[in-house]
Image (cartoon, rainbow, N blue to C red; front, side, top):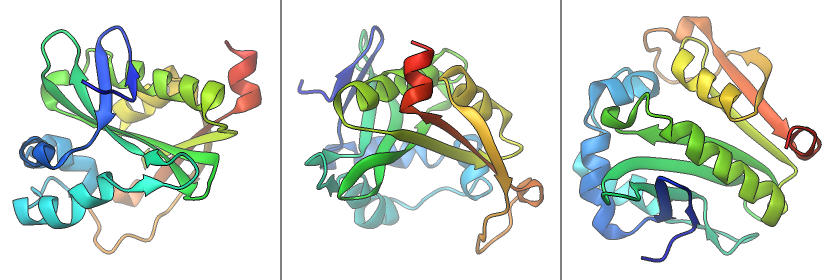
Length: 186
């Protein structure tokens, strides 16, 4: 298997059309989607025509994707995905970190392991200067992953979402890690 990044327990590889069924199952879990859209499933048509093509986009500055299918190394089980994409497609300076994992993978350290590995690769090999991540203020599990991955709270803000979901009244938070901060804490 060709992979983008490998850790002790994870393999991150480029998305393929064959991953559509895994994405449908992931985005059909109300708990997985709770902080995304209030828990509604994403239709298979939307996965195949909009989501998967976006996950397979190439970024000019790396000539590679910015979203990675995550598999458990030992079993080959699909766990979810990680995002590590440039905010401006032609510059690796600032990237957004994100993750969406199956509920069975929660609480096992996979999100932190994958995030740390991507951050390390970004600063050491890809020319990244700043990593940013955001979530709903009430999403304490995701916030904890950001903190354990080395990111620090930057700001609280209110996004302009087309539809309010439970907890959105508390706003969102942004975390960040700069290259200098990463180098200090290595």
